[in-house]
Length: 214
Length: 214
DNA sequence: CACCGGCTGTTACTTGCGGTAACCGTACTG
DNA sequence: CAGTACGGTTACCGCAAGTAACAGCCGGTG
Image 1 (spheres, protein in one colour):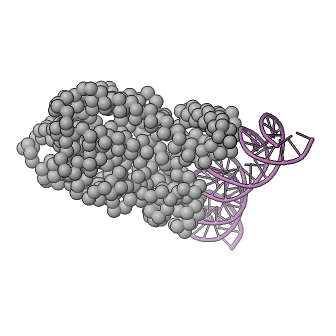
Image 2: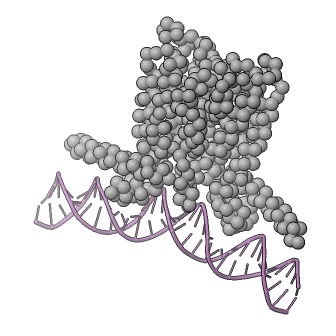
Image 3: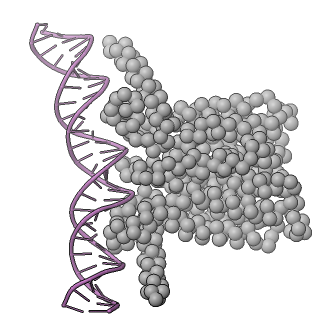
């Protein structure tokens, strides 16, 4: 049997793979998302073809890399979302978790929001729509699931939950991105503002000088 | 005086510029955002260096191109936002305007959400944060201004308005992107769902089986 | 008229990246 | 000891961004 052999090989290949991913991680963290395959290979102490043997192409490497971080972040978010607290508190805590993560490692964050490697290589024909970073999609779907599981939305709840999931995630993302760039206020203030928005203050607040309601 | 001369030259240069932009537009619409400078030059009937004389580098061309579309879209959105109607109606109409635009010309939409040409050329050192497409930022600021002008948000209104502006725009964007990719429902349904979200239904709706409020 | 500076346009090049083909050593198997 | 399968390397291709250096045209000037 080559079972044991294959197991051994598999194991060593997996270790290699993890090493390579960690090296790639370091480089991306240092050089941003446009890190070159050469640079990554050099950091790992090997040369390009090995990277290609392991990950196929640059997209493959980046996908693998993104998965790790995405999984980690999603775990944190799930934890915040599952905490035994009132709804508003859970929402705020989830927002804060996300913002804390992007604040702590902005380079990683920037990398994750980057499907746009484009490349003239071979895969240039990916359809419009779904252009967003996979992380956003996954967060949206995840949140949609939680919403649908826990809230009573009446008929069409599945669709509505997904709309809300993606919408809320997008809100969080865009506000976070803007905040990270300009730092116009503290994290807590941002969280409060967004939660207020989700809590309907937009509908509740009065007009300024015009007659209210019109 | 070379004033008249310079004016003439300026005029002709401007016309050239517009022609080039239109050619670039056609190519980007056909090939997506990874259109090559060669292709654009060919479409315009000239060669690369002319493009570079006019726009500096690829980023410059893309920025100019993006501005045109962004301006146009922002004009539509402003119109919807300024319509004499009730707040909810204005919000729905603005959402619908945006979604109609991205539905009508998805390639353009995809192009606009794409700052990530990356490029190892010379400008790689742009800071984290502000990684978002300029369109999103501009829409966010625009909306923030409208919100602050019209709503009475109490103290700290400026900041809160900006948080909301960017948040709402992000919600619209992410939901639109997801919707465009999967088409899970009609545009009207999406608009309704998002408006409901903004109108506080998230806070108002009941829990499913657990005791409400906990 | 010949001459010259500025403009538009070209060809041909450099650099750097993603991706690959073909080759090399070494350790394990019969 | 021959064979072979695998980790690794060098050297290369194709392609796109960006640039340098050269070629025609046109108006002003001795």
